[in-house]
Length: 415
Image (tube, rainbow, N blue to C red; front, side):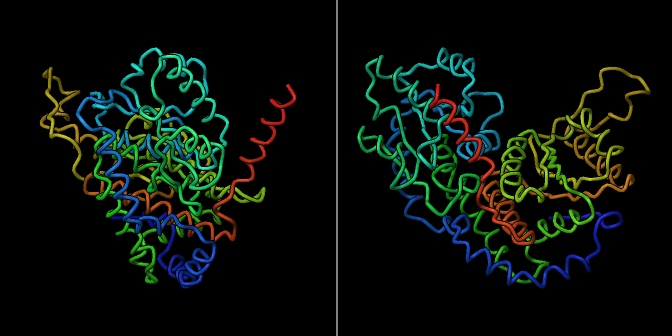
């Protein structure tokens, strides 16, 4: 369910007027040859992943740790899945770690915690040439070589099907390799082997994730805007942008969804920040935590933001807050559960934003599971695709990122 406060936001007529372009937007999206909303029909790859992962893990306890070596879309998707569907504190078996940086302290401290004999590394880069990921791979490859461990039992490669340095290495070393479709960009790749392989290895039902994504994909193809949830979100962002709202704050009221907000941050920033003029700046926040660190800005700072609040209807156990002291100042907490307090604080935030004339919408999901997470991924991928067409830009390139990479390689080559 999505609700938008219209008093200080948008009128239905504004969204309805833009909805006349849905058929044209869909036609343009199709013409770009992007496969992010089609790859979920690839049942053969899903079966291959399920079979391979079942054989890889084999007897329980074969691996204590699974380490994802990647950056950007190759890391944010797996990290989101780990946070959203795994335990928050208790370590699973195996436990999934996502190493998305080249900070030497990060690499060194991880190395000290791993039993290499019981560790599986997933090396993920679509291009097969990402320098940060290759550096990570080279380091842990040498560590395994030095320990006399066969690479084929400790490394899996996820990369382009045909080209790239990493694909060549996988073939040469006889490593298990999964493909990233050539028509799916990194930040749109979470529902490919990039996200599905680590998800399956940690015991996630990837079939349910795909089913959830398909339900949203069906809505994405609807020309009736009242049914097309991805279009509604994109239209709200686009129309508010025309009114000076060039920042989108995603604020889930769920600890498990903070990494989803991080995943969306890349999706929106790289897809829509183009041409030197167009861009919506994404901000990730967490309710209720960031009521105490960011809400002052949102309520009384510049009125340049859309706030997307996410609520989970059924969330955790019903834990009642015990009142330790008989005092009037805490009487309002009597017989209140943590969930009730969480929901009430979110309602307080929503009403405060509205009172201060700050546009906000609430996205409510029934529960957070594989199907819902798959739906959320597809929802915001499709919304971003619509948004790019509304702006008339190429949603799927990232020349600003590529320039930085070229400069880095040039500096290192001249060293």
